[in-house]
Length: 82
Length: 191
Image (spheres, each protein chain N blue to C red):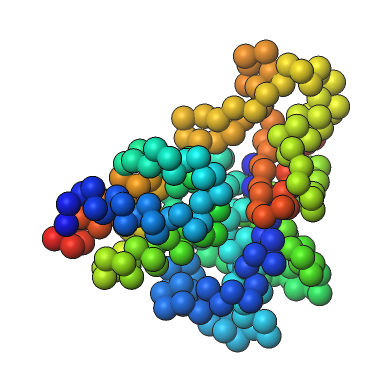
């Protein structure tokens, strides 16, 4: 799956949880879920579960620990769907 | 060191997100999951334990100036006292432990965590939209007798907020939390 497609899918996944919609305008690898999109930390686990469902992967605890930006999530997905 | 967390219950209760496959397992240890499922109100207990973990996480991350990490499972909750509207607990991570106190109302769960029982603090909870940074600055200005126009809140490289006065960091521990329309701050007072 091309990286661009992964990022597009990620953007769609996080959108319902985003409190700062402006942060979505320039969604890229550096987009920070908490600081840029103001996703509430209580919703981060929803993002993780949605990513698991969308890409049919399992995100282990260690990977989840480092899932703070769109780029982090993309790298985890690329690693798991290999 | 200090941390806090508020949860707007109308945004969380009745949504059944906690029943999603994998949800409990991503956030809670087996013991915590058993405790949740045995409790009289599992959904409320999910959010109580979450608020305990989140407030302890903030206190811990700030105290040790750690890089951010989404590692809720590393924080282990223990309830030490349970009254109808307030729950005291202990949250442990590695060799550190934090004391928590949560208040539960119809509308929200509010929890704070401190390293020690003797910590003095002032805290305020707002149930309508509020400029929380401004409220915190006003409080600091009043307590420390500093002009509020010269106080600002900045973020460190680790995304930890700090108070700034005339380009100098004020050594004053605090934590802010928002959820829905609710917000709260807690400010540690020096003895």
